[in-house]
Amino acid sequence: MKIARLSEILQQLDKESYYWQIGFYGLVTAMTSHALFMILFMFLDVPILVAINLVSVGIYLYCIFVLGLPTLKNKDDSIIGWLVYGELIGSNFLATWLLGKEAGFQFYFYIPAMLPFFINSYSRIVYFLRLSFIILLALWVETSPLFNYTRIAIDPIWLQRFHWLNLLIFLLIISALSYLYALKEQAYSRRLIHDLSRDPLTGLYNRRILDEILQESQQNSSSTGLLLLDVDHFKQINDRYGHECGDQVLKKLAEELTTLYFDEKILRWGGEEFLIVVPGSDSERIYASAERVRTRIESLTVPCGESLLAFSVTVGATLFRGESESFRDALVRTDEALYHGKKKGRNCCIVLL
Image (cartoon, rainbow, N blue to C red):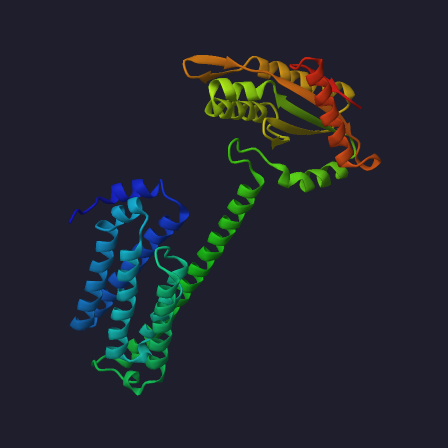
């Protein structure tokens, strides 16, 4: 049994996602709560409840310092999940049995019903069985007369204090879990939208954001420049140097375009074609912009094997004038400009207005 240092765990957590960080701090919170109750029961001289909370603290210490690093590295939280599940049910069942429902420890039975939303390593049938058991246990405790009285001599004032303390802690935990789940869903939604609108190779936008671009362009009172770039002889690059080298060319081009136009919309239009949307352009500025891209790309090299590969682009450009024409017509004109550039001999800029 290897006990990890806290510094090792925190260092590993810095590399992990939000999910694992929340799980770790959840364990710390649970351990702290049991340590608090252990001190209270020591003060009240209730040794059996001191022992129960001591065991609970030990379980969470084991989860953090023994299982913590292997769990983070293997991305399998099933063992910790079962230990937490068992500890929550076992310790609070015993506390409710000994002190009765008036002390409020039965509130914690409802927490495991939410844990399946935060533990990844179980099948649906396990989720269903665990949830069903929690529901049946909670109903039995709430309806059975066995839990209506205390089996330990304790001041009724303290029972009432425990009731309000447990209710407060339970509500805080439920609120925190609900908030964290909402954050998790928002993060997932943002990541999903990001992934759907981004090209996986270059990280640039793809065609899915065309509607957004169209709306922004129509709201813009001035003309919007459209630049359509095509990597010259890209098929030959793939055939001669391999597709991995071709991918490096596309990545390098995307990186350079992002540097030149970090405030603009840049799309991987398809294959080796890239579209740049430049608001507030006119005929002179759009040509100058296209020529700037062409000359900049012409100076780049990409390592392919033992050699450095230079490449160039052909640029077709036009202006989209908003309400006076459709966005699709402007895109067609940009494509025509690119076609003329290729016919002219490539590595050039053509503007059609």
